[in-house]
Length: 204
Image (cartoon, rainbow, N blue to C red):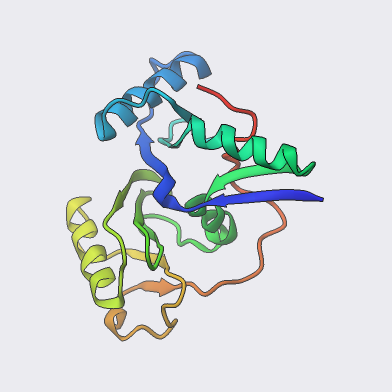
């Protein structure tokens, strides 16, 4: 049996690492990612950092999970004699499901847990532009305000197209009428993973 652990976004810190030609290798990129996270959340000692694969000239998504939590998870699954193939954030799991359906160009992508945080990402020209966690316990009306605010913060002239995933939220959400935001309902996992951010092997 193989186990795939999905962590609530409450346990994860997210940030976006800007592209820079001055970064020579993955080691330097890890250092820069750590600095970006510290700028957002303060001291990140004791956290394990993982980056998405990214592309040339593009910003990259970075996630961090407390190393002690990962160690305890690994000990638990090893004691149960189970092979743990992935430990990843819920935000990344949702991205892997639906990234192929995202519109090209500018967009917003929101994953909101009913009793947890909302992770809000924006894209410029199809590439990562920003990502952050905010608040908790969202309902339809507050999610609409969140999307409006994020569009303003990221400098969009009007609400761009995008996706919203919030378990329990009806796909026909009246608060989003008149926008290009699509409410995503649960569906089967894609066979291939567009982004692998597994914390199984440990790291910095």
